[in-house]
Length: 276
Image 1 (tube, rainbow, N blue to C red):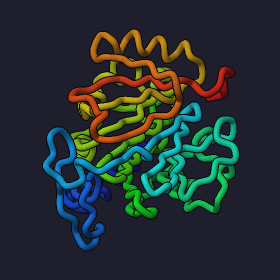
Image 2: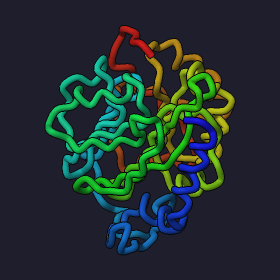
Image 3: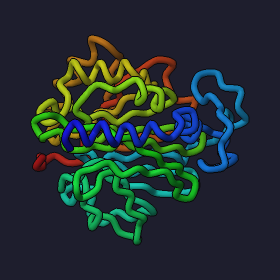
């Protein structure tokens, strides 16, 4: 997507009052949906929200490789982010989100169960706004871009709210966040960030994006060989604590969130490398 188209998409996004969008995501007290308005509750830190003590042991995310994740709520609602035929064949889900129109991110046929398809990018490479809920998971997206190497093709940042948790999948982001994007992402608890440093941001800019949001947990994605994660972990360790997990699945609850940002490197589910 060209710069002019991106600015137009961002302008469209900003036509919706920013306060309304911020209050429509990352909020554990889901009282009303977007057109009715919703009450804002801060979910980080020592929240006094009734949801603070909610048992969330069945909430988890599972990485299948590349940028493909399964997001699983407490009521077993399942959303697959950026399906890839190589790593996500046959996964059953209620919905699929697509951050960009590359074949390693948009293979909806890899997901079974007749899911709702939520494309953040049209086939014409323009941003497509998503404001919806799938059972108990609220899903919103905001416009962004890919790197100049890809002709600034459109990218979509997806934000998922479930229970008292807020997750963000940055897709193939190719730029630092704008002030408006930071405001929408300011309550994110878990952020999935591409680290390949070839078609997206370099390591230094990835660290800058993490610093803009300051989420408790950062999960590296968009890489296909373990060596890439090792390189990023070595670089990130100069800025944030890095934890290596023995599994590709991470159980989520508020009590497990660190007080400050940490990088969680999930175990890669596949030994073989896959195409970009």
